[in-house]
Length: 135
Image (cartoon, rainbow, N blue to C red; front, side, top):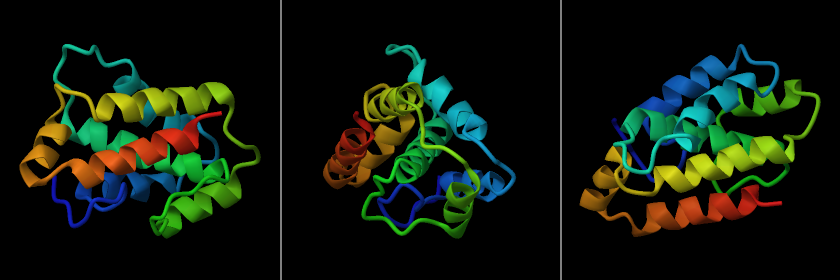
């Protein structure tokens, strides 16, 4: 994963995922990125790609719920939000919260990478995102 900052969209994996968001007209594509991470066994190693994409998907869902973070949203995310016709359901937000929580929990390749680079600010961002997804 190439990362240039700590934001949810500031890495190659998230950028690739966001590029494909252009074709989505509902939450199915977003939930498809979140569900495998949310369901990932706590003892299984979580792949960095899956975690990075889930964090970007969760941030997109939070923005669609009118709870955006401090990050600049990519144009694809803004366009997707304009196309969808409803706010995310509590169940969709709960899947996003579970994915965010799992992304920041070991064993996780993404967490390991951030631990090598200094994870405090990244983990604080995950905590903020989790709070914005809460009911």
